[in-house]
Amino acid sequence: MSTTPPPAAAPVTAGPFGASAAPAPSRKAGSGGVLSRTWARVVLGLVVPVLLLGLWQLVSVLGLFSAVQLPSPGAVLTSAADLIERSELGTHIAISTQRVLTGFALGAVLGLVLGALLGLSKLADVLLGPLFGAVRAVPSLALVPLLILWMGIGEDSKVTLITIGAFFPVFTTVSLALRHVDKNLVEAARAFGLNGIKLLTTVQLPAVVPAVFSGLRLALAQSWLFLVAAELIASSMGLGFLLTDSQNNGRTDRMFLAIVLLAVLGKTTDALLGVAEKWAVKKWA
Image (cartoon, rainbow, N blue to C red; front, top):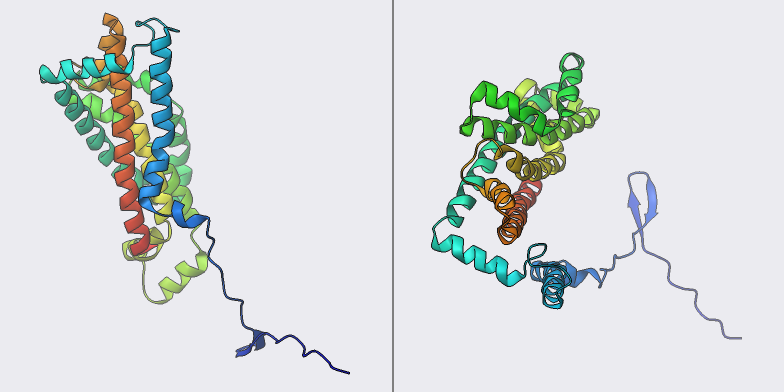
């Protein structure tokens, strides 16, 4: 009687705790190949915005809304061309971008420093935690009259308001992330003589790099949100001013232009920060 040979057993390797079967070779998922490519993600990310743009044009052509309620994409482009001819659009964009980046940078640095302080010191957390929690709950518009009273209507009050908006996402994520750093990792670093600032910059902050960048990206989004509130403070230029001035003058086309520009600039700066995040995670995390 013929017998079939038994199936070949998996190769066995000897490890420090005895023999163990070698792991099966991993197989790459074919479905994720295209989506992992940058060009494919960019193209697919444009599908929905293009469809929404086409729907916007269709609704405008069908006349479902009046031109005052919903101007056509062509009318918005015409208003942009008009502002470009007057050399105003570039100035609005440059001033708003400068305010956002300045406030974001200041808020991120302060959030990183104070977040690290409260994340590493229980005493600082007990003393300052309730205060920061209460200030975070105050709406941004409630701070506008106070900033005008203290700082006037110049750039300082506007940048300060954006700084406040950028501060809390970074502060919150950094302080919470540092509390959950692996204690064994910290103790091992201390055994090698690392303490204080050296321990923070060498071990603890690199361990929370993904969380830090999550806070930074939230802070950047908050900065663009707070920009409109900041430019309510007696501004004469900027996208927030363009938005509110167009509302007062009934220029819906310019209102839509300001909204689209805020969306594009916000996404562009977030994408740039995402590139920095990938580099930082690859280098330190």
